[in-house]
Image: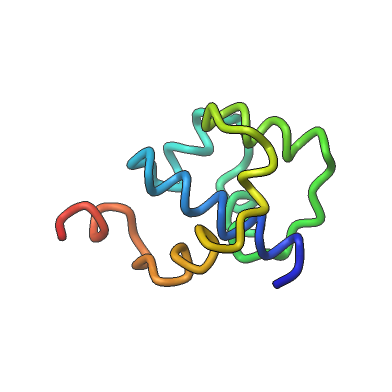
Length: 87
């Protein structure tokens, strides 16, 4: 996986762990919802500043956004947060 894919999938993973939709996360971070989608699909070439900002928003260390194990688990998440938490 590329660094962009790792950060994207881990952003999705932590967003799900916080039971947030993309819209809710956009409101929390002031990122545009479309940008969150681009991040989570691994298509955003993020700056270190934005990586730090994302980590801070989840109250985690930035290096956790590069964790391959949680990224692999994030690949298995359903398309919507509400579907995930009904299981």
